[in-house]
Length: 136
Image 1 (tube, rainbow, N blue to C red):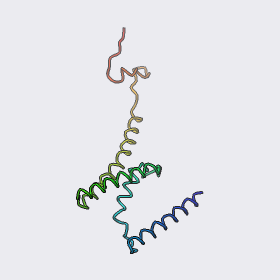
Image 2 (image 1 turned 180 degrees about the horizontal axis):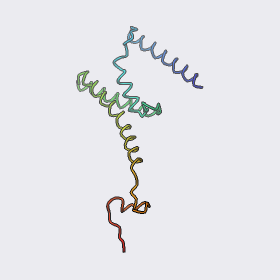
Image 3 (image 1 turned 90 degrees about the vertical axis):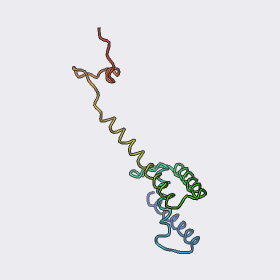
Image 4 (image 1 turned 45 degrees about the horizontal axis):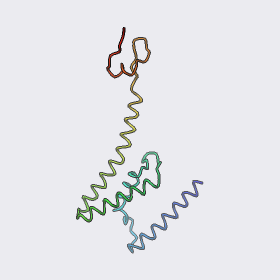
């Protein structure tokens, strides 16, 4: 099954390359260099985990719509090309940093030791957060 998926991906990539070369009438190794950042930002913003490879096509499609609208709006506002690249790069950094920070926060929460009383038993939730217990 994996071999068939890789073969289909290769065939679709070949067709896309032929369309791209036909549109620009040149075949150089660095033809698509200017759209690489845009594509990587769309994939990561769409929810594909860079380190795990999980994601959904719908999320990537919505991210493409968002980034395309952003890029088109900046073009209509006469924003210079380097500034557009900087904005797309910033979106890429944020879309990678937020999930990593969320994972770090979850990991730190799990690693936090539970407060106990002197007998080694867990204290009630009110006592863990600094509130006084009512003792007779």
